[in-house]
Length: 384
Image (cartoon, rainbow, N blue to C red; front, side, top):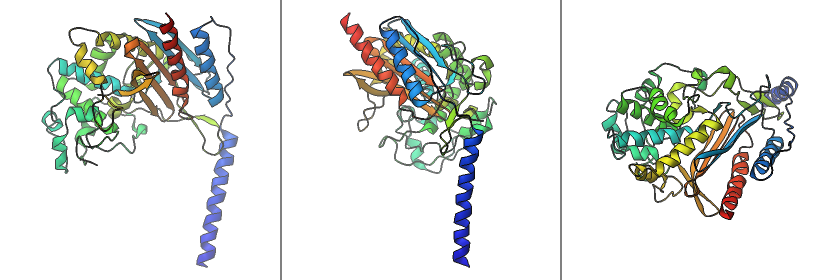
């Protein structure tokens, strides 16, 4: 009897899986992207259009936006496709996407700004700034602000973001951070472990050092000065007409569907919830590259772009580091449920590129779009 019962459960489970697959196939939209390449001016712009449209059709991407800067100018900013497969509203250069971990660049810059104002130092110990932190692991006492910036704190990553909570309270971040009981996976400053938790804690460090909420500080001191007036870390502040919907693929049917839950809850703002457009991120890239050249404090920010941990040379302070055609690149990938993003700059050449998309599958499209364009730009401007 026990053997028969076991196999009956297996059959029932298999039937349930089959039912789910059939249900998904019958109820989800069989969306298929098919954008036509229209005539455009020759040269770089035509090449960008060709690359973007090819990848969108290849990977069935609902909506995408791209921004490209050179020196002090936005040379291209454009939206492609649709904001949602349900309402089919068009993506423009002003359409706002969840940028995910691109958010960390802004959090890191905010920390450096507070250091510039002598509100903190990056070598300060975390427990000295946040004395109310709870922890059972005594090694937490050795974590510095720098360790949080370059992911060498020993803190684990976040397992579940609980986006469905959609917290909006001004106290969400403080209550979250001070409600933790920190436990490390390794000694601080000994190993690289990517930690969104570390950046959420940095968000509360910013609150403590500035005396204001993280989101208000970022809006007033980081976003608005760069011309990012429509961008915000608070999703509930974004106009409905600018928003995009998150999309995923059903794991069995392969059909694209709109996710019910938007990836937002206020306690994860510092690591993940910047909502922005390709146009406004392009403005920020221009302002950041100008900041690096500022004779007064440019060297302080440039220090963020150097390898900060000997055994992992691909991480600065907040910035992921790489190379394209032997040129140093800085930036960050982003990805949460329903969205993928990538921001890339080549400081030496004053080049910047960003791509935002409202889907979370076939994520290699990010570098498959931006890297060839970056290489083309390096070649183009070398010729001149």
